[in-house]
Length: 82
Image (cartoon, rainbow, N blue to C red; front, side, top):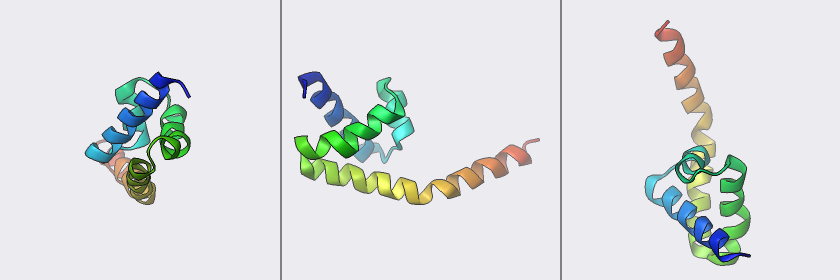
């Protein structure tokens, strides 16, 4: 794996852990696609640093469990503001 990819993966993982960010937020922050951000965490980070990878994955799992709630709230706000 190239050095710049490892560095980016570490930055994305650190951002997700520190900010409790979603994959979309991390992708937007670093100017990469959602797929790339997800691959950095799920596929690349366990090879680079398994401890950080586990922490980042835990944040992503919480986000996944809560996403239906955030979506429902966004829809509710959309129709309340009409």
